[in-house]
Length: 207
Image 1 (tube, rainbow, N blue to C red):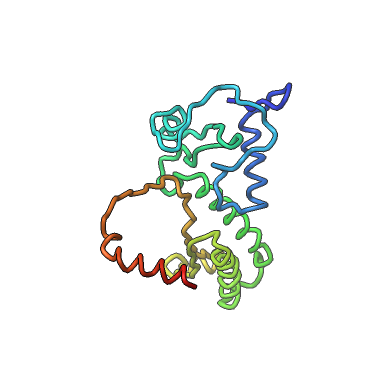
Image 2: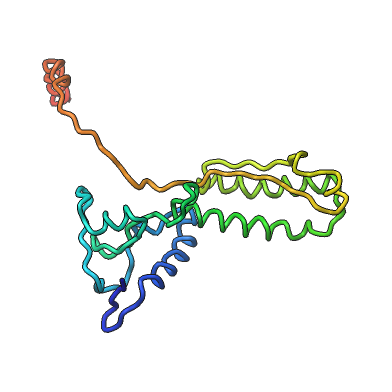
């Protein structure tokens, strides 16, 4: 599927990649590219049916098969959050993006520590540095939580003597609200105090 831009046609994959970069910069890598208006296109090369309340549409069918598509609703936009990964931890595109970003950032942040004397003080400095990075993202609501620690079971004396050390960290990425369900109910309980409501309305008119 492609997007039409005036007389030209641009691959939707290219547009999605550009939107990912723009979203990373303006909102954050924790935000899915789904349901963000794409500026510029004048059409979609393949017609796609879509309805927010109807699951029997082309877009819904594609989404159910882990395919993000394009729709036209208040402009053109991508619709879908899923990857094709069999690992449920990476079912959402934002989970994959979060993992890539954190790994790259933390590895680059640890560059100054490489080849320094391997002491407990160095290990603590590394842990503090990673923890600062992770908690910054938690405070910015790009992560739901994160923790970093030194596991002695992962670090044998032999490995430490060979200059090898493992630092563990975990985190919870922010999932997108993919499926919002609303329960609608009719009730008579707001008529119980009908007279009181009338009195309240009269008091308000008298002010």
